Image (cartoon, rainbow, N blue to C red; front, side, top):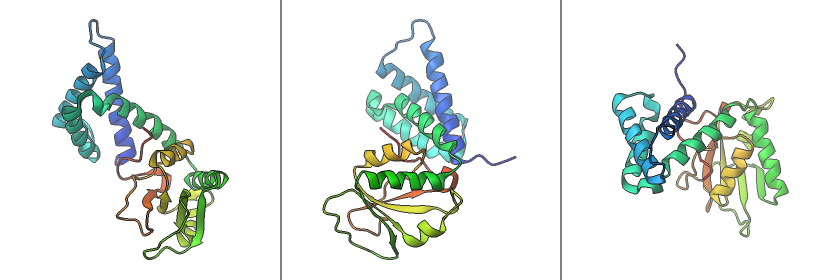
Length: 210
């Protein structure tokens, strides 16, 4: 039996949660407020975690969302979160050419007058003076060696300086899943490090469009 990937596990969880919400909405006299829906899905998640209904790959996500639901209530926006996961992952999992998609996104950034650097080796701490422009840097050896025939063979790290939601929307438009930005892991000052993986197979929850 093939082991379930994180992508498959998170989509299975999201779709099950959305189905439970839809079933609840069809129940006569169900209170259809944001607070009531949040309480319902938070309780559903807690029960799912207790019963181990889903892969251990998403146990950490469930734990975090339950905590958020209990502390923030409707402001945790858990139903919306599940819907965004389902939509974004469904599109990305159908992307058979992640390498080509990354190149298409980079071309779009060029058109938007981002500062794009693909011919520099990033092997140590660097500083880039971009005069406030949005910027993207990929180490030359990764860009030239990790993409073949439109496919991504190995992970690529993107060093990005921009509004994170702008980047999230651009990635989603090109059916790419990026890891959340990590400032500590970045080798370039004022930039965050993001990773894209072969076949969009992120090992944890990707950067989502809010």
